[in-house]
Image 1 (tube, chains in turn brown, purple):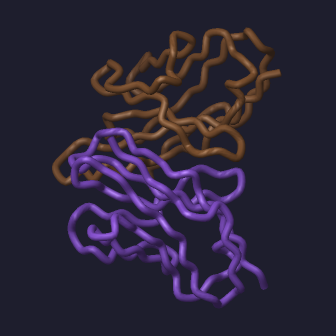
Image 2 (cartoon, rainbow over the protein chains, first blue to last red):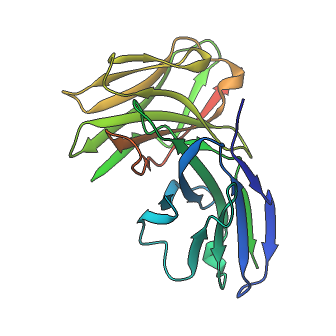
Length: 116
Length: 114
């Protein structure tokens, strides 16, 4: 069964460093999302992406964050200068285009980011 | 705007007992509603979804949920809990029509006592 894959599964970084989290969405999906989950808290929407541009972003998604689809398969989240409060599990998700789309998101296993 | 409220951050049931996890939603347009499950150190897996067809929705692992518009609720139930059901459960909502962001509740951790 097709699945969303994310790398790395866990990254530890120093505060102020740049981090890139990578995702390979399901191949026939065209809408992509990043969510994050701070330990013990709810899953929060960061950004949605379609047709090579951001469709919607939350107030969390400030200038420190950017997303990119550099080729036909990868979808990346970059954090330019990490802060302690960026420590979280980051989930990539995708959904398919077409009639009857129900907004169901297919999630990856997540990338745990620890900022020291 | 849409939101969901999950009552009870922790729920404990005995193995074999009824599981009831509560979710109330708020949406300015007809909603799509979802329940996701998260096992420890894993991603989010869809349990079931409501998309304006049948109000009683059956999902995987014996779970079901009923959409009640009058009560703005979408509670998750399972007749008989199994040890393997221990996980965190998230109710979520999105505006009908797809492609829009899904908003999650705060989650309910289900503990199953042998």
